[in-house]
Structures are given as structure tokens and as C-alpha cells.
Amino acid sequence: MKRTSFTFNLTPSQQKVLTDLLAKGNYQVRPNVPYTQIAVTGTDFMVALYTSGKCLVQGKAAEEFVLFTLEPLVLKAAVVGYEEVLHPETVTPHMGSDESGKGDFFGPLVVCAAYADLDLAKQLREIGVRDCKLMTDASCLDVATKARKILGTERYDLVSIGPKKYNELYAKVKNVNRLLAWAHARCIENLLEKVPGCPRAVADQFGDPSLIERALMKNGKGIQLEQHHKAESDIAVAAASVIARASFLMSLKKLSTDHGVALSKGCSQAVQSAAETLIQKKGPQALLTAAKCHFRTTDQVLEKCGYTRRSLTGETD
Image 1: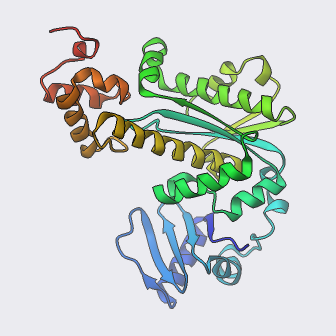
Image 2 (image 1 turned 60 degrees about the vertical axis):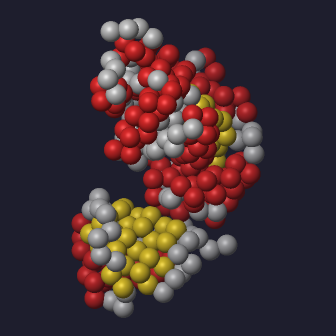
Image 3 (image 1 turned 135 degrees about the vertical axis):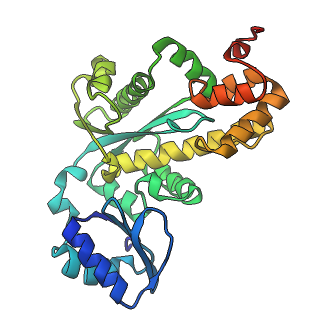
């Protein structure tokens, strides 16, 4: 099966070559695409070059564009089909962990660890697994379903901390990264019980690298732990990111149904409006079961609705 999505990190000189090529070639420029230097549409594919230097190629004919245009004219190297030779560590047996919901006011904090080897890596790429931040919600949910089927219950593990438990834990540790490290460590150790021979774990670096190391208990102390920024380029981490995000989205939908209020993602004005509606409908204490209450958003919506933080515990001012 042909791949329909490719991501490359380009050097400044490669970015200039690609920009000139796309601007002068037979492509339809897509104006005003956020955070891009240039974005175009070709026949059955699209290309977006972001200000970060990341190049995204998607569509039915994406592979042809990469093979016959991007590789010979921009990359000056053969990459597609040679990932196993160029980066063997990405397809040797290992696990990756990633989280979702850390920056969302409503909903849980979800961490997932996923296992990959040569065969699984190929299957996961074929279904379109990549960094969930590059995917729509609908695509993320669809690909996550396929990824869970490929991995089975024995090759991934999920830790979901709902708002009520999250607020209780945060009240004790007072630090998001410590809470996050604990969840990553539990996922890694739980997956090690399912795949005891897994030699290596890769995680996105979100704080002091020692946080996860200290949170690992006896079963996880022997694994080789790697942490680096933008770890989602690793297929196991990407699979974990997709499954974690899908779980977050499904949990947020259920919370919306349970509370009778459409709870939005992120920390936007729509989120504040939903929080105000929730308070007006169920009182300020409802935030404890729907939101991460250490966010500044909590104080903002409580003040707007005529309350203070004391009201979260039922205290009167």
C-alpha cells in the first residue's frame, strides 16, 4: 500500500529550493494557510512548508511527488523506502509514549505507550499514523481505531486521569510535569509487563528528563529511556500520540453529554464561555469534575460568574 503522508525537516537552503520550485511550478498556491511559508495543491496531493522548516506532503499522489520531485531536486537523497537503512532505530523493537490533554482546560490528561517493531512500524505507517497535531480530529479517531486493531491490547497501554482525579492529584503534587511523568512511567511499566523483552522507550521531553526516570519503579529501571523534543517523528511515539488524542476526544465528548454542556478543546474564549455556562447550570463545583482547575481559566470564569476559588469546595465567602 502506498503512503499518503510524508513529513520532512528541511534545512534553510532546502526550504529556499522548495519555495522557488513550488512558486514557479504548475501548482495552485493556497494563500493564508497558518504558519506556512508556502502551501500548494497539485494533482491529487498538497504540499505545505511551515515556518519551522517542516514540510508536509499529503494525498493519493504524495509518494510520486516525493520520489520524483522532492528527493532529486530538494533533498538530493533517496529517503522513501530506505527509512530502515537510514534510521534503523525507528523500526527496531521499542516503545514510545506521548500525552494528550495537558493544555486543554476541559477533559482528562491521557498518556499512552505503544510498542513497535519492523512489521508493526510498516503497518502503522500504511494506515497514516503520524503526529496527531498534524491530523484533524476525525482523522485521528479513524486512524486510532485502526492502530488499536493492529497493536491489539497487548502492545499498547493507556492511563487516563479524569478531571476529578487530576484535581486531587494536582492538589498533592502541585506540579503538572511531575504528574505527567508519573503517568508516563506507569504506562511504560504497564506495557513492559505485556512486552517484557522491550529494550527501549522513547518519550517526548516535556521537562527535566530525570522526572520520568525517578518515577519509574523496579520493573522499569532496566529499560533504556530516551527523551527528546519532537519525539513524535518516532513511529511508536506517533502511534501513542494518536491513540492518546483519540481517547481524550472521546472522553471530552462523554463529559459534554454527562454535563449537558458542549465542552470545547484548548483554552479559547469558547472554552471560557462553556465554563460559564456549566457554572450557571450546575454551580462552581461542577468544574472539579469537568476541568483542570489549576488553570488560570478557573479564576477568570469564577470571577465573571461572581465566585472565588473557595466556592469550589463549597465554602462561602
